[in-house]
Image (cartoon, rainbow, N blue to C red; front, top):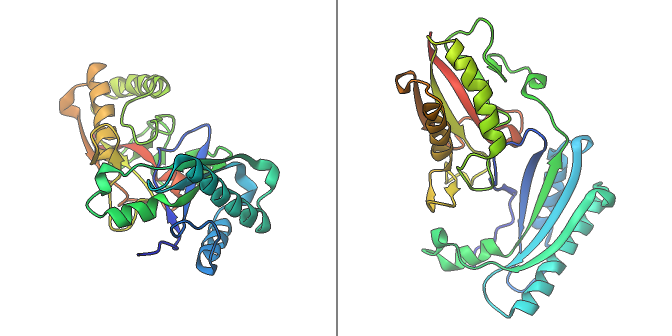
Length: 273
């Protein structure tokens, strides 16, 4: 059976303004909870990659595939979680910031992956390490042409990063806070009536062979498009003329190069003034 020991990050949600996160997954062999050398190297590479000075909290969740009894799988998934915790602490992660350590038991097969049942099961035998970071705003990154609001003298190509537009994991439905932020941006768009723009949805960290993430409501790989469309529909509801705007999902094809937490995003890109 194919073994998954390389460093993989899984998309789980868009960047949250109050707290950024990265998820690292470590995969195990059937009925095992010990780590082999390649898996340990994966953990080491993960810790080296992140800025540990910005880490606020860490959560560790263990899982099993769908075979076996529930009680046994809960014990096995907990042992897997504890094994990973021990390696993280050995590599410099402070144990006091690990606020969650939990075995979740088995994961039923995902409909999207049932074409290859052995592969699906191997991906479910894993531990997810969720690293939550202290907040950073887009202005601090100093990316030319990228703003958190419409600049005073906008030009074609300017990008407005909607850092407070939040979504639940795997969802394209707007939260209450997201709507509040879109209300603020919508008022500015009404002020600059000549601006035409594209609403762009982005995701990060899907495997290289999958450019898009799954929307849990539709069960299809169209999450970035659906999130962009949700923003489009909300602006339309707020009486912004549809002729001024388009929407498109870009999946993981346009990273900012500033860390995966900034690649889970929705942007407005000015196309005409």
